[in-house]
Length: 285
Ligand SMILES: NC(=O)C1=CN([C@@H]2O[C@H](COP(=O)(O)OP(=O)(O)OC[C@H]3O[C@@H](n4cnc5c(N)ncnc54)[C@H](O)[C@@H]3O)[C@@H](O)[C@H]2O)[C@@H](O)CC1
Ligand SMILES: Nc1ncnc2c1ncn2[C@@H]1O[C@H](COP(=O)(O)OP(=O)(O)O)[C@@H](O)[C@H]1O
Ligand SMILES: [Mg+2]
Image (cartoon, rainbow, N blue to C red; front, side):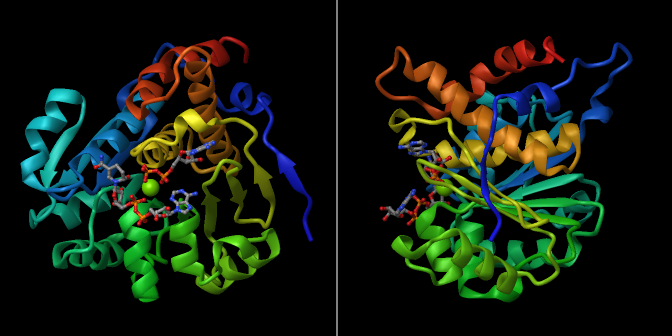
């Protein structure tokens, strides 16, 4: 059994680099976030805010049209497409990273979106699946978009219970690894199992535990924000296990900085803090 390693602060210096002078938006990846039903519009907005503030070059959002005004009022940097637009499959093909699930819900449209995503992703892309997307897959494992080059699953413990059939008290490293292999035998899947001690199971079978984070972060939308940050890091820095580890560490580190003088931490405050924190680590490279 592999030894569980603690993620170290060094990971941020390693991953976050000073941007070269000749940088342009196309250099830092295209990301599409899909989610936000009528009831959960905030979830996709928080994920979007995570992705933009983590440094994604171009960010697009496919959501229910009712969310458009709120999305642009918060994040005018994001492009928008109605999640029922017939051009969505073509847009998906142009993306480096697709984050699907925050606030997606379990409607017929949500199910159709999962089917369409599966049919249109390809090997050069990374797909991050969170929240409702994971619950839909729990009900139908064939919805997993296996043709993506890399899959990153970001369940909390209850979502992982639904997906893996392992009850929360029995979610040990060895049980989780076995379930992950059963879920996707191709081995292109990373599991970010969120809790107060988030564990990350990499494609090559390594296990990491995140030492940062605090109970102030027990606020709705915190995981939606993380999904966006992970997607933003992959878009900007490419797919590497280190980039996922750095995103998880940074999300909770931002939470810790805020928790020093805030009783609770709002997900949107975490996103706001990211560019400043990233600057500090980039200057140390
Ligand atoms: N502002 C918004 O629009 C928000 C929308 N959200 C969306 O709401 C939908 C449902 O997601 P939920 O996660 O609320 O619902 P779930 O029903 O999937 O999960 C919540 C349940 O899991 C249990 N649980 C056990 N261990 C847990 C752990 N470590 N972390 C979290 N929960 C744990 C909780 O007690 C609770 O019963 C998703 O699409 C999600 O993206 C939420 O992210 C909250 C914010
Ligand atoms: N007590 C805690 N200590 C550390 N991190 C926490 C704590 N509570 C929540 N978090 C973090 O907040 C996030 C919650 O994710 P999730 O449950 O998916 O939120 P949501 O679906 O509401 O966006 C995870 O990244 C988790 O690690
Ligand atoms: Mg969640």
